[in-house]
Image (cartoon, rainbow, N blue to C red; front, side, top):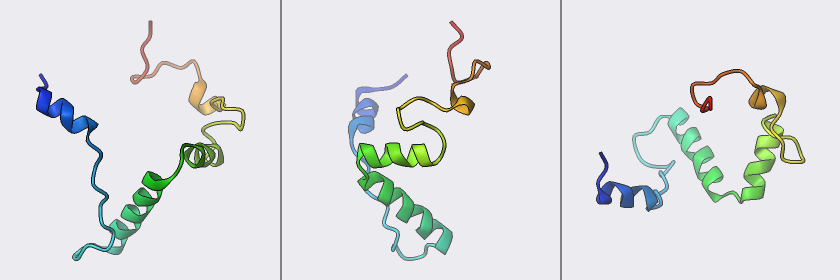
Length: 78
């Protein structure tokens, strides 16, 4: 069961993770840079990335691998 404090935490934006923090390996630095770039991207930039990844079509529809009728543990069945 969540408390009001926990709910407030969900509404608070996260502090960016510093990709140049000491003690990080290069893979972690690379992931943090990519995350920072995504956090700074506009909605349109994120959408265009999803189009390039093959998730959405240019007209905003899900591509076949993402809109199939197959059952999913993450999608309600009713």
